[in-house]
Image 1 (spheres, rainbow, N blue to C red):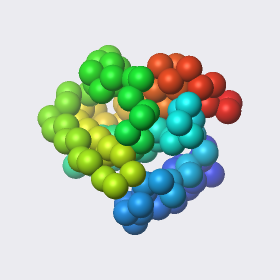
Image 2 (image 1 turned 90 degrees about the vertical axis):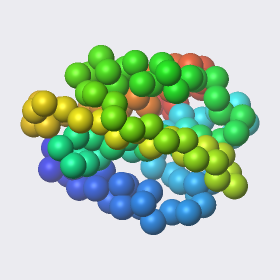
Image 3 (image 1 turned 90 degrees about the horizontal axis):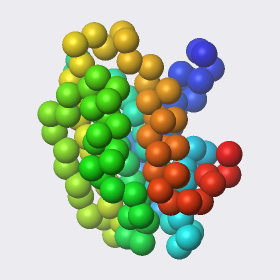
Image 4 (image 1 turned 135 degrees about the vertical axis):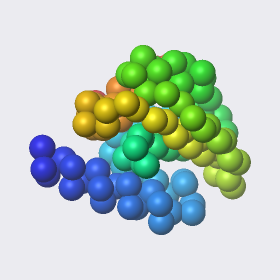
Length: 127
């Protein structure tokens, strides 16, 4: 578990530093038919959780509303959702609050959201 937390911390830091989202290779991304990946990164943020989703322009077979619904089902309250266009695609940032942050398994949430996007992309995610 500690190893996985360390890996996720490194991945989160990598995402924060990247300005070119096409270079993003986090291993838990879903490949689209266009070869551009969707990627979800989840990390703690001011009494809640911040979720960042990067995707290519042709990689929108999944819907943001579906992801937001899954976040709500996890007991998180979405307080902010921003979508930004980059050269390579879109970056969605979702900030949420939760009554008890210790009850949220960030790794499981990240996997669930990646799997959800993968399901809609019908790509198999290489898992």
